[in-house]
Image (cartoon, rainbow, N blue to C red; front, top):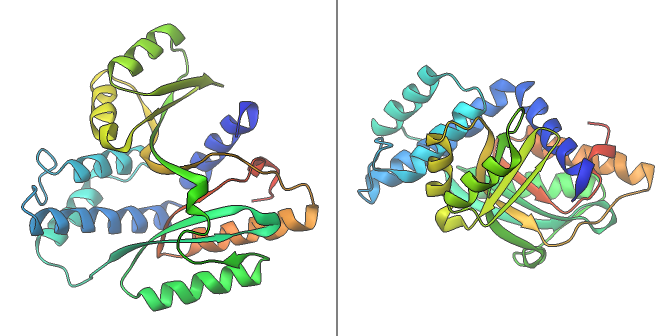
Amino acid sequence: MSGHSKWNNIKRKKEKTDGARAKVFTKIGREISVAVRTGVAVREGGGDPNVNGKLRDLIAKAKSLNVPNDNIMRIIKRAEGGEKENYESFTYEGYGPCGIAMMVETLTDNRNRTAANLRHYFDKFGGNFGNMGCAGFLFTEKGVIVLDGEGLDEEKVMEDCFDAGADDFDMGDDVVEVTCSPDSFSDVRQKLEEKGYTFISAEVEMVPSTTTPITDPDAQVQMAKLLDALDDDDDVQNVWHNLENEEDLDR
């Protein structure tokens, strides 16, 4: 993905998130709960974001998605109290219409249900639900931080990003995309936060090494329906793909 379409996709993702607040709250709530319970289990801070780095990053992500602080605190307290849900993380792979490589990250309390639902979506909308490893080799795990760049000086932003430990920096259409290694993601995000930047999104993502367009209108419709079905599934946390022209989809 490059140029104008890249920034359009980032902005559209943010706008779609803002229009589906309840769904977003549910999904980020699951992530926070798992981070708290994992932190308690391995004695890495539990519900204390000053000690639990994963929780600290998720709180920042939740705030960037406009989740109210009261909601965040309630989720943390519930998780610390030993809520009964037992979510596990699984990442599934497959191909959408026209061979678009896809990775689907889930948090689920029933792996069989989730796998069956994902297989149904892929089959229904012209894709192929695959085995582990069938598409993952086309992606690289990276920390991806997207900042509001409106009114900012590009040279100053670049200096701050590299001082924070970023590997790469790209600025366009009032948006700044910063990438770093997954291991340094938390430190880079925190340093940029301390410098006063406004976050649009910040998380570790699977970034495609190459992208592929869909030009056939019927295939574009199928791809849009597949992505919508995945987004609407409460078990699905993230969907990564190598579609080049997502802005052409009617979503």
